[in-house]
Image 1 (cartoon, rainbow, N blue to C red):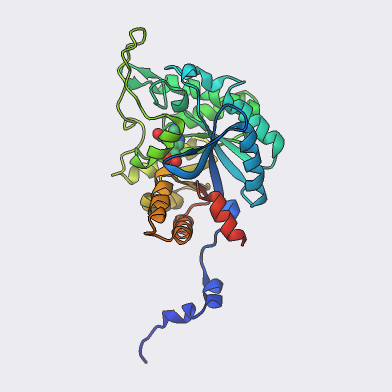
Image 2 (spheres, helix red, strand yellow):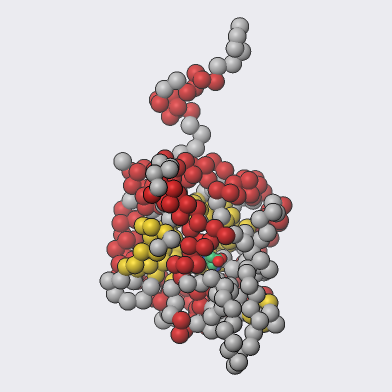
Length: 337
Ligand code: PBG
């Protein structure tokens, strides 16, 4: 008998392929990252992210209602903070009436069933674009954690379902859990960016929020030496075992979900972390990954929809329970057809 095996029997037609498919995608697998700005009826496209906008709260709410109707059940939210509100302490981050806090309140009022996960990190509020407070030329870990706790508690007060620390400080998950519990927010979850790599794929995101690390422009009142990149807290992309270590620490500290970021170039990490933890793994398909597909499709070099669905499916296959992706809406529309 030759050949001994005929794997093609399970691929002969679409019906059989549907029967044996190991992974499926649905709109509730996605989280949509959204950029929020001050103002009213304001909507501006981000040049390096075609189809993605910075929106005022009112237009964000309209969009969220559409996302919900499409089956999307979670959004990550990020705010574009006015330059005049930024400093080295990031104190605007825990202003109970800040843009983020107002956005959370209004989104939860308009669409209570949408899971809202505000980003917890100081970079949009830092005059230097760093995720923490700078002291002696470095990010002051423990002091930054105390700031992040105030920030997370103020998000919880505003009605956040989850907080999503993306700062990569040591011990922040434990501090956030303790801080949230002490303030009476036992049911507010933590989705930790556990294995977040120092990646050039975040470029377009930093354009969106104007949050790229920047030098101290000779401020004599605050003569700090600013680290030129985020490599003392975000991970080295040459490392794999370290991701497992970081994820396990976060589980121990009380994270409800862990995240791996970026996505496509890091699927080995996703599988490794998935096999190591017993809580849901989220994957962030980041801004640069989105921009690459948009640019190639615009040139007519790749089929946009097919590449989008292939990448999302492969992220899920690698072990993602949830995918944070700027394609969430477009993919949900296709899946609903
Ligand atoms: C900041 C943060 C970043 C992203 C999410 N949260 C950028 C950074 O670390 O510089 C990137 C997301 C993306 O590229 O889509 N704490």
